[in-house]
Amino acid sequence: MGTKNPFRFTPLIIAVSIVTGIVIGTFYARNDSGSKLSGIINGSTNKLSTLLRIVDDQYVDSVDMTDLIEKAMPQILGELDPHSIYIPAKDLEAVNSELEGSFSGIGIQFSIQQDTIHVNSVIPGGPSEKVGLMAGDRIVAVNDSAFVGKKVTNETAMKNLKGPKGTEVKLGIKRRTEKEIISFTIVRGDIPQHTVDAAYMIDDKFGYIQISKFGRTTHIELLSAIASLKHNNCQGVIIDLRGNTGGYMEAAIRMVNEFLSEGKLIVYTQGRKYARDDKYANGTGSCQTLPMVVLIDELSASASEIFAGAIQDNDRGTIVGRRSFGKGLVQQPIEFNDGSAIRLTIANYYTPAGRSIQKPYENGKDANYELDWYTRYEHGEFFSEDSIKMNENLRFKTSLGRVVYGGGGIMPDVFVPQDTIGITSYLRTVINHGYTYQFTFQYTDKNREKLAEFEDTESLVKHLTSQNLLMQFIRYADEKEVKRRNILINKSYRLLERNLYGYVVRNMLGEEAYIEYFNQTDNTVLKALEILEKGEALPKPPAEEIVIEPLPDEGTEKTTAQADTREEVPALRLYAHSLVG
Picture 1 (cartoon, helix red, strand yellow):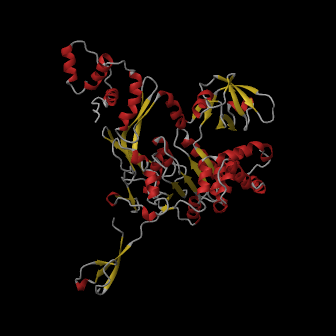
Picture 2 (tube, one colour):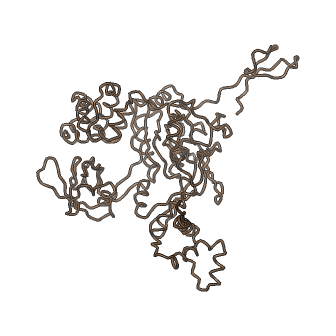
Picture 3 (cartoon, one colour):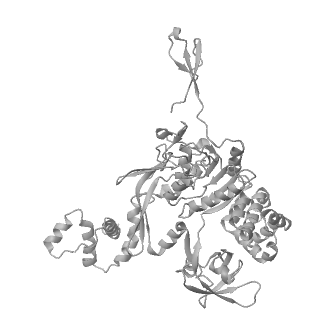
């Protein structure tokens, strides 16, 4: 039997120790005398930072301390909670740009197919549009060097196309209508990052707004969207936060403020080192009486849950969909001198009713936490409200006395199950392998001139229907060695067709048209619209329980309508009492 190596955990122990020293801010304690060193080692405050110096000075092999720290930082933060994270310097700009509202680049949306960058669309007013780049162009060279093949990845593409504002990049473009490579020199500029993906009138009376994240500019984008809808006589609105994983808490607070009257509590935060901080609506909101429905699902998290929780607890609107993610922790960004950063959890946030919606987790054990959505799926939560077991010890009440729960996300007021009609193994295969996306991109590219004749979704879809697009796709899938299974194809016919049409609509008419097209058959959106049409967006007080009491002269103990009906009940008088949680 082999002998166990007693030092096999030494690198990890060293790494954890090093980073702990860094996090507490005691770097590189320098001491010369042996007696002084012994004293420092025995002191708990400087012990870890001293270990760092000892390893650097005396370890048997040379150690790349920078590399060791980079590897250890995620591990030490991973021992805290699932949302405290380390962001290396090389990733920080990309992470921040998602929420900051803009980044510096050339202004295109692209995809990588067959080891080549394909331009899906050109951002209006951006640097690429100004020099003449077009949707359908292929980038085959960057700064006079070929840029095709296995080296072309999302990471390398972004590295080459993004860059400081005012810098130049030279692109070699292959255009379908041209025989020769065309060269463009593009001066990088600020490219806006929109977080409101769609804002349109869903019918003559009601509007729809989809928000993808809560960034620096989201509140301004929301105000613009609301103004546009009101211009069209909007009498109620659907706010779609499905798939919105959050962002800046302040953005969520400003946005909720638009819908609440003065003095209403929006959210409060509290932590070990942070005193309770309450945020109230200031009464300047532009939509304080506009009927509203908020859509959420299992991917709605953080700032999305702050928004939904404030609306629900104040009984300001109806929450529709499925139970949200359950993130009730607040992170503080802290940057280091080398350009890296951490996001450290510093507080919990609480909805106006006083509930934390943070789902349970174990410090340093986030595998189950990250797979919670799959556990929910396995337990049938996506399909049946009855499968959801809320913690009865975490019952709270809204301003009207409706019961809500903490400890695991926002439970919607109206549950809408995931629609599984038409989903088959054939459908999952072609979607998961990206074949529907690839086919529609190629189809759009080949027929772009003809497709450009159609200026709205209805006429474009009508044209696609006449082209028997689904049969073309089935032949394409055959070539990709996806076995044709007619029974499954027939079951998934409508979903396959809508998936294909939707991608072409997005390629030609943009993201909002794509969202509007799919919303036409989205059960959650249709339920929200039904609630608005019935005038039921504002929640009502909970139903009253009928309590039955004996007449005064009978002296019988008070009982309720839930009493065992096998017992003989004396002459009764009815009283109405509110339900007690």
